[in-house]
Image (cartoon, rainbow, N blue to C red):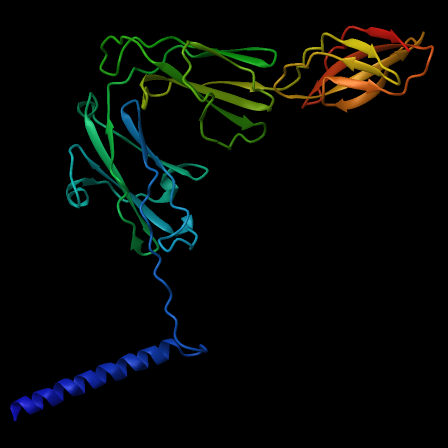
Length: 361
């Protein structure tokens, strides 16, 4: 008898559960046409682009977020990232031990991170005892909406005692070129003699005129390390304040802390060099003017000036010429033509004229 009552009780509970579930689904689908469709859960995937480098006594992590979610089609929306957390260990932790036993740093919002385009950077200092030849292991996790991503693949990095900051960075200007010089550091961070460095990374940022509140990130000015204690920057066509700092490389991935920053304000009032090697060739129905291309980073175009016979002044024959040659087809027989060529940069600064060259037609 008791067993029969127990079975009836379980059946009654199952019916109530089914009724409750049906009522809940009816409520959720209220106002919708067709069958109920559950929204797919956004499955964030692990960060796969984590890179590590050392800047002075600090370690910098940089990465990009995945382009799509776990379904392979849904676009990843960065504004849905709630926080990022770094895991750090000084020893090898295999399998699932890393997340359980590594040090978990505090959760950091995207607003606290340094950003360059799609690249995010996180920097944190290490103690002097954690530097010289020490192994470090790093991994990242992030929260997308309400869901946590898996840990990124663990990255190993061996820190070192980098050089002290580069001393004596100075800047000077000669027309459009900016010359930078500095001194070789002689000590490491521990104050001990430094045998040498493998090169230098020179960083630059340009703050446009009238935008003093704009603070773009410093960018390396060359793709490879600079091997000498000097550099000439000729890419100065943009007007504004040019700021520089330099760091010394101990080995790839281990840089000193940046030097003091130097700056200078550039106004492009300097014209290109005048064209050289101007020659004129006579053809059947035109005169061909050739010259050597002007080497100027912000060269825009050339202008051709012409004087006919005994005219006193040159007049503009052609503007916006972008190649180092020009065909003059407005010539007539029995006349003497004299030509000069100038170079014009992107700011409209015009060079002195080339040497005059003439040819009869």
